[in-house]
Image (cartoon, rainbow, N blue to C red; front, top):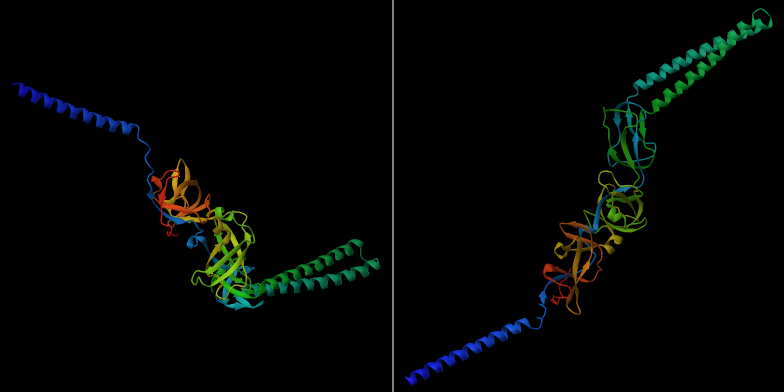
Length: 371
């Protein structure tokens, strides 16, 4: 019995020791959790690119080649077109006939005015003869002064009628010349707006002519781009069909007001010695060096938006840490986002994992990641 009691007591003491040891171990663990030292920050792997001015299609602004000097020619009288002597692309010289109207009605008007003038001259001859007779009779005191005055007045009216008829005849003859449309400068036909048999109004454009000597690129730009430009700013202009054919140009004119529909402003770029391939009407792409120096292209995944502001994470490559900087976005499209300000070319920007980063967090990146 005593031996049995001793054995139970030994088991109880062992269980008690195990319980005490377990309690102490748990206490140590809980204590260590409550008073543990801060964990080291997680080193996150990220993808990145080097920020640089974008030189893809977004840098270019589409436009066309236009002449600096061009004119829209029209008839100065109403009539039916009976001849058109040129087509689009034809070269013309000053004074060359381009189109003609039916002359018949104008020739009739000339003949009618010639008849009126002939009659007026006959009336003037008769009135002059009557005035001479009345003058002789007045000198002989045979006719009263009133008769002489009436003859003088009739003669003056006849002279005026001759002058009026002559002016009307000159006008009719002038209008007859308006039935032919002639070139007022050397150039190339760029547009035809009337065909043979068509009746055109006075002042309605029939043929457009342009001088090919001075050519310029014309592009329509948004206000955000125009605000960065000044007259004289340099552009590189290339043909869309052959991008390797290029020419240097400088802004000659910026439209003072935006188009009411598109809200863009027309910019005319004067080309310096453009190649022959820069024909009138050719489609071009104009690249602004001024805009390229300020706009940086980034993927949309690099942009962090918070509280109405836009940020990006840039990498401190020496310490392998990230810092958040605010930026201003100027344009968004399928290719990415254009940064107008807040980011300098050459810095490395995080493009993936931006929502898991904190200020100053250590990261791991591949220095070979390029743009």
